[in-house]
View 1 (cartoon, rainbow, N blue to C red):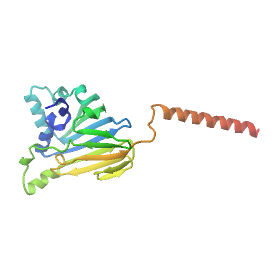
View 2: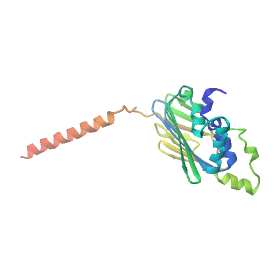
View 3: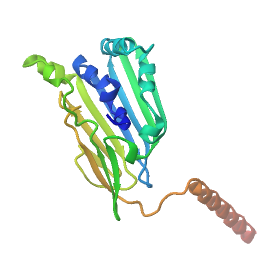
View 4: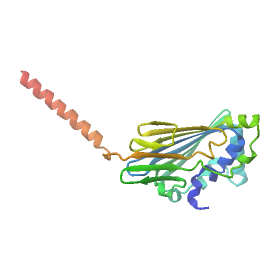
Length: 231
């Protein structure tokens, strides 16, 4: 398995455990910049303390002191093309939130995620949630299956550098798109696709602030001139 594949949820040993535990809501927030990189890719997993206990047990069996140690041991900035990678978790009663944050990512090094640039557009695709062989064949059947799937949900939020012109999203608003999937197929059969226009002007850091200062200065000068003229 290539090192970059470790970025997927399956590689952390979380994907299958979360699915088999039958209780998880996953939210992904991805922001693409005008230079075709990913400013931030954040995965947030909300699950039960019971499912987290299974993950914790798995980490201990592999010789790690904690889930965080197990996760961070598999992350290498060079492998994922990210400037920084962080993992955080919050335990509140029976609810556990695990958050993975990748910042300033080169999508050519980020497994399952791509940002393709053409002359007039950016094309974004994420196949992280198109997976096979994750133990879903062990899910219960009939009414139990319905109850099992009702606790699984995927919410995906994408921000592109220009207006989105084509996608398979559930909702599109300007340069943002959202996907909302539920059930047992949410984590294994959800392909994220969006195409956006290229921004006509690439913002320069600090330029907006400079323009604002100049505008205020010009306004002040015009007011002073008008005041002198009226006197």
